[in-house]
Image 1 (spheres, helix red, strand yellow):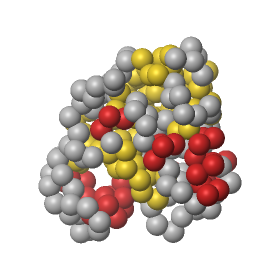
Image 2 (cartoon, rainbow, N blue to C red):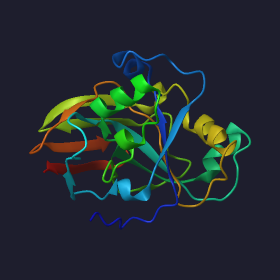
Image 3 (spheres, rainbow, N blue to C red):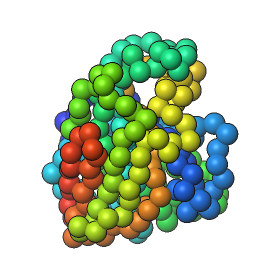
Amino acid sequence: MVKNKLNCARVFCIGRNYAEHVQELSNTIPEKPVIFIKPATCLVKPGEKIHFPKHGKELHHEVEIIVKIGSEGRVAREEEALSFVSAVTVGLDLTLRDVQADLKKKGLPWEIAKAFDQSAPIGSFVPYNKSIDLNNISFGCKVNGIERQRGNSRDMIFSIPRLLVELSKIWMLRPGDLLFTGTPSGVGPLKVGDSIEIKSNLTGSFSWSIVE
């Protein structure tokens, strides 16, 4: 049994938020943010082993910038959005691509492809302050020491303030909520025995190994 040891209210995730990633999966650029949710059991601390999910065959890595919410309320304007952010880190939105492709063909929800246990490895948080430019965070992903993904938050289709406004139209934000902000291009497969490392100029690096 996977035991979640990370305190978290909800895990909000954004799909298709980098143009090159949208293109590599042959999707269309969305007019509004694509939002889905993962349960807290998805979260994995740095260094813990990740078990390859048994209900799919193609496990893909998607490295992302993550922000933590520190205040309760709704963000009415982008100008006030960053006052709700308490911390920042990087993490992974692990995806069973074969399962997701089948669900998309049938017009079904993505949960079993995106929201399975251990599908959201997450790094240690850095407290947010106004000296941090959330629109200029470089980050990347390596598998077995080879770079797979490299991105910068300035390339997001929908900025973090815009995302918080859009979320607030539907949900009251609460302290502890997490927002995964989307992945750049370069997503690819993981297999048992792989070591995956993610890092950013803000947070440093974090790693996990994939086991059966």
